Image (cartoon, rainbow, N blue to C red; front, side, top):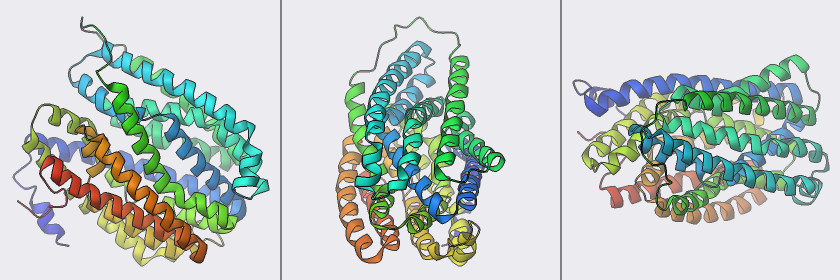
Length: 440
């Protein structure tokens, strides 16, 4: 890949949206580097402190609540990015506060109800679903953390819509990992249950900080406009909700199945490999933080030509920054996995496979985000459902015969297929190819 050609495409073109993209994206990437480091440190501290057996229980429970929190947000995260981005550019603070308030209340009530039901059956889930009796106590504390995770993550997307990238990333990806790492380092928990209790404390602290920050951000002069919810907002929410559920199931479904059919040690190796491979996609996430509200704004204004340039240039930036990370992981997978402690080196092949899948994710660009921010949520949902079902079937058979490595292969293939199909859909709906990074 000729990276020099990609970089040269920017020379003499840093005007308007391109200039905004480059400088804002570099800022977002710097912040996301901090987030990626925070997550890596948390995984490292947990793995080394608990070992492969106990960390397997912790990471499996973590994957469970990550998917549950997405389910509990009911599509509100992408909804807030879209509408807060639109009304934020128009300075309609009354409408913004109304939207965030309504979405937040709905999420909180729903998450409390679901959590209460799951906590009642947490022992059955541990024994009957995952066949791991000693998972029960860890799962209990992680489930209690789920409404907190759902709430602070939801508000982080509201900050993203307002283009408060530093606050958004800090709330969603830095505060809990850093707080948990410090607590684990000081208290030295011997079991996954104790680590789960510390995670609950870190999540509670993050919610308190987030609510304080949001209350201060929205204290702004308001226009005299009448605040009302956008038309069809809940209809859009349901489409985004189904998309988010299937996306998370596809991303973490391999760990769920591995949790059912594999040992705690294999689950720990898979979890660490998957979370490490996601260092590659942090570039994609960083640029999406900047791009999401702009995609929505440009599409609403009918500026399709600028939307195309912005999307393709963002893909170029992703490729430039992520390629060195991919090469580093592929060349030294065993060394990287050994950093997490004894017994994790066996997960090196999983790390390589998952990293290749994440690199394809980056190469395709912000395709799912483009479809969602341009009002094509149904297309995204349908693609997710089809690839999600196929991915689940693939994961089942691969895990059955190849264990945790099969989960890595199935997850990588599902993510790749989903993004490549979305590339075709963006071409069909918006008229351009996000992978055309060498075009003028």
